[in-house]
Amino acid sequence: MIKRARRLRKNSSIRNLVSETKLHADDFVYPIFIKENLSGREKINSLAGQDYLSPDELQHEIDELLNLGINAIALFPVLNPSCKSSDAAEAYNRDNFLNKTVELTQKTHGDNVSIITDIALDPYTSHGHDGLLIDGKIANDKTVEVLCKMALSQAQAGADIVAPSDMMDGRVAAIRETLDRNGFEDVMIMSYTAKYASSLYGPFRDALGSLGSKEKPVIASSTGAKQSHDKEITSSATLPRNDKQTIPSDKKTYQMNFANKKEALRELEMDIEEGADIVMVKPASWYLDVIQQFKENSSVPVAAYQVSGEYAMLKMAIQNGILSESAIEESLTAIKRAGADIILSYFAKEFCRSLQN
Ligand code: PBG
Image 1 (cartoon, helix red, strand yellow):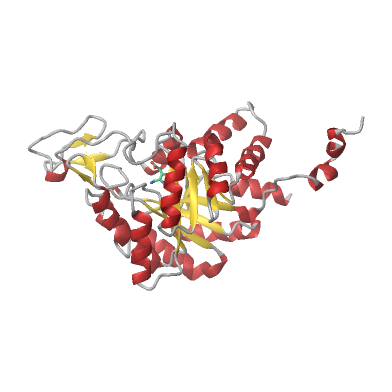
Image 2: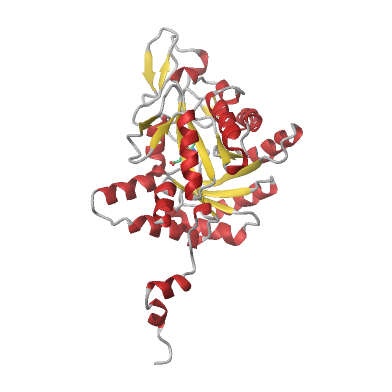
């Protein structure tokens, strides 16, 4: 036999030598939930192994991440319900909880860590949607105006990368223009370019208490009566004006249909045209074909987000002895092999710890 493929699988030193895909700690972004009015940390029930952190605890967490070689974090704030409103005004308050945390982190760690902040209105809207609701519809252009103010406040607080995850049309160009006009031409935009309307965001929404979470966001009427959004809210004389409308129960008018791949290419072309510095596919594992397509067609780096549901499924299977821990490395390697230059993953910390041993 002239050709024997098995020769290159002889032992681990040969296998490592010819390995086509290698994961490094600096491939990763670690998503972190920060929570208002918390001291220290608190377990996240929907995401075993992940904690809500206070701003001070976050600084210690970053020390740990830097020791593991992870240099980038994506921050998601969990807010007091009193911060939420139909106009999401708190989203662009320069001194809101997220922005104050960004400022502290920038002061503490400077350029050692890249701070990525999410741009979408869902933590700030009373109904939990990523955009403003006008007459029962997500109002694209009005939302983009708010997203620009939100991006600017995050840049002023010290965010290195702003990451629009809202899927409104035209937001990358508008945010770029706003940042440049205000002297933030060095702040990068990592766009959630192909973000699918996925069932895999469930644990994240539970962690945040946003739309579709098991704990439904509660809308207080002017009489103090409460109504959960899963009962569609229709005209009621007791509700404040903006809540007198039906609230869409999903995000399918802005997030992509999971049946579509060519449409992702159109989103990619628009985002690159509009000035995105990094483009993203989300979720990752069920969308490896889209990641590969982005890799082949993108002139900028490609990120992939292994989302909360992907993490939770693997974590539960491993915890219950159904899969072995090597499933983590396999899943992350597949995402990189498909073409991701950057991986956002809740496994980043535990996986990079295993790389060191
Ligand atoms: C909000 C946002 C979501 C995620 C990241 N940013 C949820 C959503 O769109 O409902 C999900 C991340 C995850 O599931 O890990 N725009």
